Length: 157
Figure 1 (tube, helix red, strand yellow):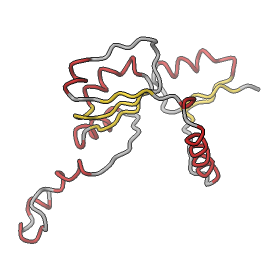
Figure 2: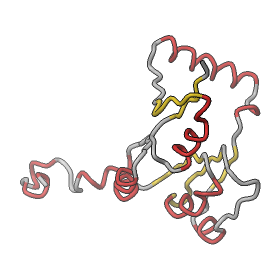
Figure 3: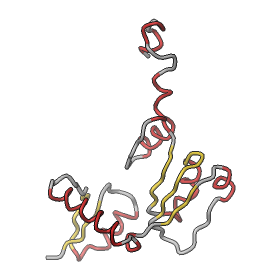
Figure 4: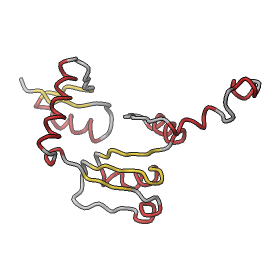
């Protein structure tokens, strides 16, 4: 809002700051719909890393920008229906990824990078709940109903 009331000669630019938002790179993992909606409306979606393609394909193709990318590394279904028209009109690139297909050199680089992060103690795993083995059904219910944000760990004593 300050940009709107400031003297144009003292601004240093002709366009409002919000017009520059699409020139930044954003990496985001979001756990609530409100935050996701804000990001999509504000800056759009260039890339989607998809862990459940069968359940989210329609949304992925709806939100990804022109010439965007969708990288898939998980799906609950063996066959997935793709919304063809939105995909072809937007020229969306879909790529499938599985860690087991990494080249030996890429695997060494990835393990090295992860090792450095682990040694620096900068990786945080959000554990939402710990459930004893006898209550595994409860662990499944928590995940399936989306009642937790993070991992549900089944413990063995």
